[in-house]
Amino acid sequence: MRADRLLALLLLLQNRGRLTAATLAAELEVSVRTVYRDVEALGAAGVPVITERGPAGGYRLLEGYRTRLTGLTDAEAGSLFLAGAPGPARDLGLGAALTAAQLKLQAALPEPAAARARRIQDRFHLDAPGWFRDAEQVPWLGDLAQAVWEQQVVRCHYRRWGGEVRRELRALGLVLKGGIWYLVALAEPDGAEGADQAEGAEAADGGERRGPRTYRVSRFLAVEPTGRGFERPAGFELAAYWTAAADRLTAMLHQGTAELRLSPRAAQLLPARFGAVGARALAQAAAPGPDGWIRLTLPVESPAIAVGDLLHFGSEAEVVGPPELRAALAAEVAALAARYLPQDSLTAS
Image (cartoon, rainbow, N blue to C red; front, side):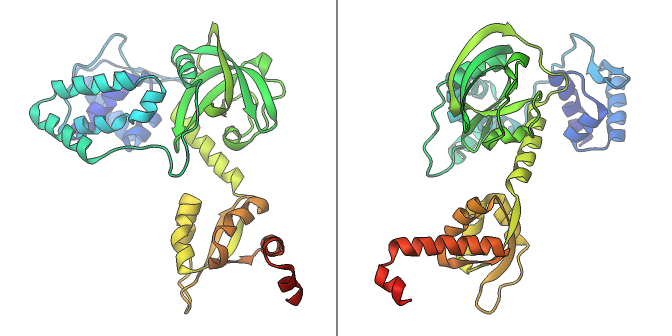
């Protein structure tokens, strides 16, 4: 409904400051022309929307103006009780604050909305970490969170694949992905020489030496505040950075493809082993043959990693191509046979 969209537009401007028409259109999932009309409608309703023209322009609310619309629908109120996963909030030192906020919100809600919120809490639970993996130790997460919040430069001792390094970082934001915490930060100019070689999540920045980089929080060995503040880069948005960085990392990881034949059992396991990449490959697979096996093309990482991943399927999968990957898998299987089979059986064969 248009009234809901106008309210959403108003709250976006109130919470995030100046935004371009294109950004508002993307957030509201409408056309830029619709944003123009909605801004005019807000102005006609007495909302002081300021239009700033030029390359750095956009829309913003008059300084000091805030809407007093605070009503929540039942669905909106209930969703707030799913917004903060208790584990991550506790990691950031906000567990008690989250609990207190939810209690205050529930006490302030009218009975229908409060009842719906209680039902949601009874029926849904968010558990972010993946299965069969111990939670990573992140002793410096609280210090990094404080640096992010206060826009402080921190002096860090960090462990990467190539060894340990020391950096002064401008902490821009924290991201929780699959139960693993990452810091997005800018290296101070004096500490940027010999910048990290891309590895793991740190490859997600695309290798831009002076741009933001991604650091795995569990690899910080020490974090010390410097007492110096910094200005955030103009136009930097954490969510947009992370989406782009994740896309780049995915493109870098998948260096080739494998032509596979999979048994019905292996086909069932493919999405669990390869995630969304495996699910997409499965959706595009050819129809099963008379034996029930299917053929598909799967994006894979380097040959060495692909061999290890594909061995998980055992005899339930066959690599048809490319020839070099098939040969690498055959060599690995032969080495395993030489290790585990009795020598006389190998000689007889």
